[in-house]
Image 1 (cartoon, one colour):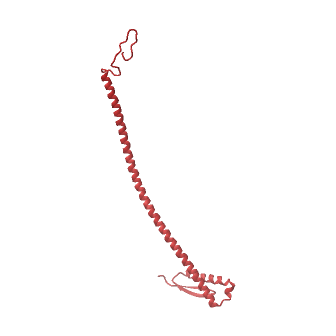
Image 2 (image 1 turned 90 degrees about the vertical axis):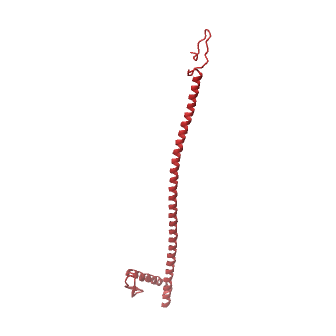
Image 3 (image 1 turned 30 degrees about the vertical axis):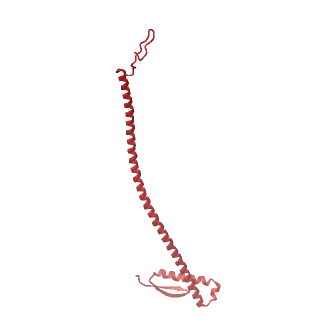
Length: 173
């Protein structure tokens, strides 16, 4: 705890010595606040006609009013701060959840990309196999034709003997 501070202050034209654990600057601010309240009342004409004990009561009431308004304002600010802290907490929680979801989605994308590459490879193999089957089938057909033509490729096994005076056809050559 800090040492007790004494400060000479002027309130209502009289000098008082205030003591407290706050700084001398703070004690001067308190005295200044009281002087401001007194000068605020002295500006009102009705205040001058009021007996001194009533003036003191009015001053006390106004200071108490300022206190409770400031306290209510502080409570309201504390409540707002608590709400904002809760909102920040919720947003941080949402951010963490979103980051986790992002990582999960990135993992899924990577897995799907690998699966897609595998599927493309399978597709390519199937297309190649299909071509081999189709081309192999054509080769078998051609071999069958060659066998059927007596070993001659592309020639008909039937031969036409031209009649006298008629030209020979390409196949019979």
